[in-house]
Length: 334
Ligand code: TYM
Image (cartoon, protein in one colour):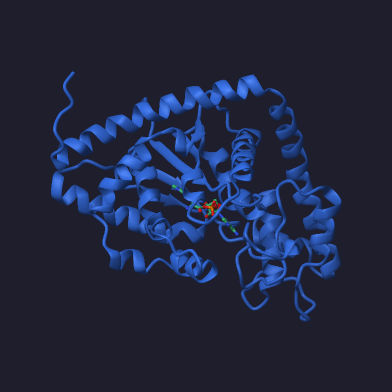
């Protein structure tokens, strides 16, 4: 509990351009939950360097991502929106948690296996211990709930395991966090291969809708989306392309899949694709306008960045001091 509320933590990487999957699977739920919780939303730039980045591009994308959080409807005066690299507690707690995490556990992480295969020339230790930094992010704030897409569930589980292991040794130090996964939109699939998730790092630009895509681009990508030859609009696993389009439609409109299926009864895939493009644009256009507006106010944004990093560090230190004491580090003279 913090200020009488439960705590929420979540983060996104500033790697690549944000996709509709990031928005519908995570960011949208952050906005829904933000009133109810004391919230920390981090731009996890330290995670980003587990694969090589161009420094100037990373810096630019990190700032854009922070702006997108605000533009999506998170008030940075109420929610702690900050860069992970500005709060030293993340790395400090990570070191300690590294010593309570097993190689075998990390070896089982599917994201590590995928990324190691993709970046075979750079399988660095950071890529391997990535989930420990994520556990540090979450546990540092005594987090109760972590809204994420389905692809992050395994990392949430290892976070809980590390926290429980630590608590078993030292008493109730960490709150055990729960994942929050939305009913629709928790796994938005690629428009070109609906058996794969929509991803920032997909090489085919037609596979993903980016949050900064203009209306025509969105319409074109939707029209080109891979479907099937069944010719009926049903929400079922046998039709992954159509199911994905319906998921996007429902996540954008708040409708239930069965109602959407009724709405499109007897219509062709073209009509579905046009409707999806229209609802996606109804979400993205105001978001983009808001990003442009916020970007103008550089001084305000800088003050937000500074104040929130200080706030985050204050709460991070509370947990960190407790943990340092538990493991036996000498007390700091006052
Ligand atoms: P990242 O940056 O890959 O993704 C950010 C969020 O978007 C969700 N997501 C999706 N949801 C639905 N459909 C998709 N196709 C899709 N693609 C991505 C992700 O599940 C995530 O919620 N390791 C994390 C970042 C992180 C973090 C944390 C998250 C670092 N520390 C602590 C929560 C708590 C990541 O790489 O997410």
